[in-house]
Length: 443
Image 1 (cartoon, one colour):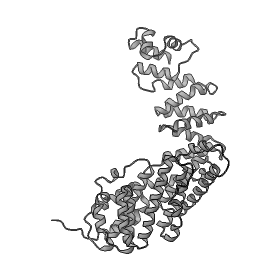
Image 2 (image 1 turned 90 degrees about the vertical axis):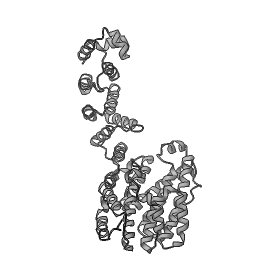
Image 3 (image 1 turned 180 degrees about the horizontal axis):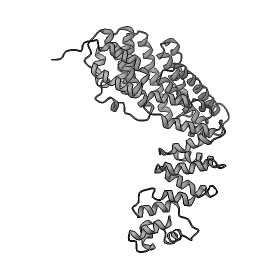
Image 4 (image 1 turned 45 degrees about the vertical axis):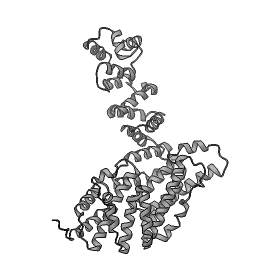
């Protein structure tokens, strides 16, 4: 490798080691020693990168040679030198170099721990694609099937897999399910919330309730340990949580409420409404926690009206509409409830639909959903499928021509195809019926 570098230095017209030292930023003495083929001092990956830049070579230049010369055998695998090289391979997505080293490392005693620690160090603040290779190495080679690092590795890959394909998310969640029990408490709480969410999206109500019950037990147990017993580790435990503790506690009730509501078990759902209506008693609330408490209070107010409307109380409609105007972020889920209640009780809500026409028929539906890898995007995608389904039913039941039929057909077909195939049979059957309704003629 050294002879290639020296040849390149000469060919690019550097008159001396001193000249190249100034351009590359490497100390002249260090540079001279590392380029001397008889010197015991070997080149570091940082120095190789500096030389590559000075010689206008692409990132990763001579990495294959560096790998062969620096780590010729397993007894030469020094972690202090290995780690910077692995990090650069991950940053540059040089998977061939990365796999060559990981496969060798994994078979050596104690090296899996190094790989895992590096993965955890990088994953906290980076989204490099190749970090996944570190966790997959743990999964392939960890012999203890009950180890925490194996469970965490599955959890990290689970998070990397989640996207906007709602059915795929659900399959990934079910595949991850056997491992969440071995997670440390801060990750287990988050895993339970995610598992419940993805089950909710695909309407697996029994799983939603199962995870919600576990979420309640775990969050309540942690709260009691922190605030009703002697505890010296409050700040350490709370700071490790990915969300305020009150989120997990409140969601354990909200999830059970929502699953029962969507099953049509309205009175059974009502018993889970009060526990998250006012969580201001929750101890240890910081500013983020107080904001979450406020959100839960708002969710309780909306959901109480949801029950009233779904059970046929049309007098609640004006108050509900006023609440929607006050909280624009809740318009989309509220429109679904309004349409569903109208279909159950044969109400006419044409004025409401006209008022929110821009929300129902956005110029670019996918852009309006604010696509990103998040709960919000996934939930909004799912809501649009359900809203269009209920909207189609609304017009079909009233036998009314629908001017926006083409918009609904296009939006539903595209959304179902890309994000939620589980609804395709129901929706396409409904679309077939809709096509029998004559569209309103235009002059």
